[in-house]
Length: 377
Image (tube, rainbow, N blue to C red; front, side):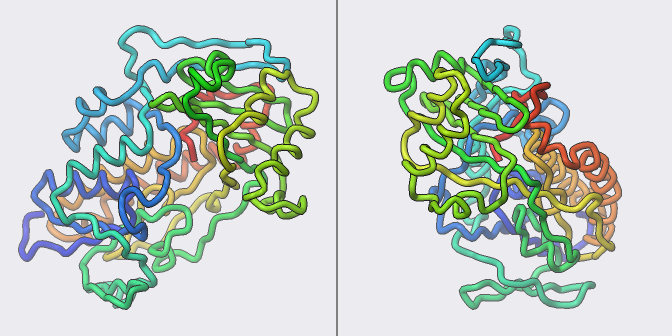
């Protein structure tokens, strides 16, 4: 940014996209604050494992000066992929070559910690839930938080995910249920407590589908495996079945019935999990999702282009973050920076969203896509 005074920038959301944007801005001497509704960095589980691709996510990390640190943490062996049929017959097995770095895996929590630790102290304001964006379109903007505080900024960056509050300031769009739902199950100390599951899944991912349902298992670091039970069901299928999410035994019994014809080896992915399930119905924004240019508000990642979890979400979010931060650094005004960023981001995200529109159904197909790219949404 070549002119003074420096713009006051607020990023809403401390996920990979928001933190990447803040980091790259700081690399260029530009201050930004990140506001997140969580009480702290350890408030909730950060989800499964992510594969960061050489042509987007890794580009952002290189610009952030964190690529080599990422490679030290990443698990290239996590690129292994096994595809099976419901009888647990291995149909396809891909093992990464030695030194393969195209899309190594990293735990979501590890990536977040890498980004958090790279930021200047005090950058992230925890426990700040955004209530509304006020002020005129030309700025300055007022950010109203639920704790009663208000701040004034020149640029609001919505990195606040599927149910973005920032999005409401520039777009009426809301995510729609895809018809496909994930139910997440966890396995801990797998080599000791669940050796059969560990052997089945290997070092990366394993999937099986029959056209109506799918089991997708993915290894994380620290001897953990997450399993996603993928089904074409109503969004309220659990309560519709007279159950609650806390009724682990009841849900397990229902799943065992639905997968009764599957191999006992695969049914262990349902029967033996540790602890409760996590319900993750899959939503997506309408395609295309665009908005009229606003000189003081923009979006990145899922806030801008929520899509089914087919391996592009976090990578696009980090590429968005990188390009937006560089646009701010290289343009004289916030308005010019936002225009330049959206000129590239919106066509790219629209093209990808069209490609993946309705693709949640492909997760159930017997002609399985490359599930090794699924990013743990």
